[in-house]
Length: 327
Image 1: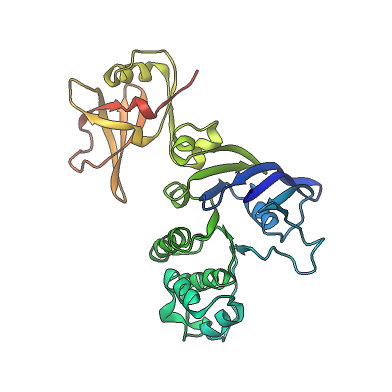
Image 2 (image 1 turned 90 degrees about the vertical axis):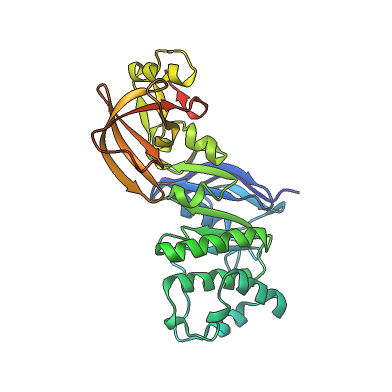
């Protein structure tokens, strides 16, 4: 039996494609993430999967049954697919337990397990206007989950949260899959939200899927400059710099450009690396980013070494297992 199958889905707005011939499948319990710049069609795609927007073309199947859009349902939406929008809303001046009781389709025991996973047990006696943004979002997710969905669609769930509440919500979303065994599809534009979590990542541009694969594969081997930049800082080193670095990494000079991320470099000894002058040092949470000069080229690398000094000459090498050779 298929779980989620999206077949050649398109959506036109004002005669222009917002989603353009998108096809993919999602297996049960597979953690699937979709990333893309603002306006790339991510939210429209999620709403069509949820049955909340009507596709202009193509079909969506959930557990081998056609997902009908609002043109064919009096009440839009699929009963087994829950969608949390970027602009989730909770009615004001209601106690949390009242809102949750209206949506609950589960036993008290199962509902309490969901409240525990969502970390809201201590909030149920409060009114909705007494909650922080992060608390409101976790309650909104719990309200969807006690409706007993099989697929949870999360549209930019971290976009309006501070770091503390974002980290709490990341734990909640992980537990939803692992403890409650509910399949999740998550949309975000931030690679730090999706790469550590996802089993599979799809990248969207102008309504199309332009790259799909496992997180490390799409990060280290992007198909173009757009997908490279979408997932973080990168550089394309010219052949003369690449040929300086490669012999210290066990690879002969090839006369080719190479695609690198800052994490592809490592510090080396004088006999096992290329000389580089440290031009600038920035502390990035958990590591240092060094701006280096190698001959006529600026190179950025990440290191845990806190003893590097500005203007110092250091030596660097490449991890060739994670770089991409270009023409």
